[in-house]
Image (cartoon, rainbow, N blue to C red; front, side, top):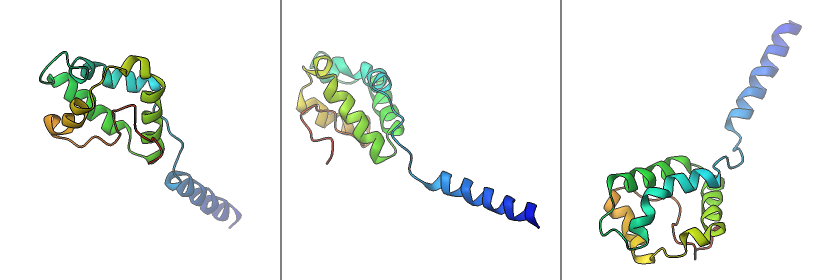
Length: 115
């Protein structure tokens, strides 16, 4: 009986651990690698995004499933503003339509990451 009670407690603890939201796990290095194919387009050097750019956007979208991840990714972009300083906001806003997928974080570094 004691063993069954301990087993039930362990299962409950595991379930609680699984459903509790975790902290952001995405890193700024990941954000850079996802966005790297998009930079030529976003800075105006390439008129139409290549498939690699859309792949990067979709990868970034897939990696930012939680609010914490989205904020972390947004902050990474703002912290790396020197790398993204030439991004044109019109290109960034057109990217979701060109890639046929919503972007779950804002690409422009001028946004409020807490919104």
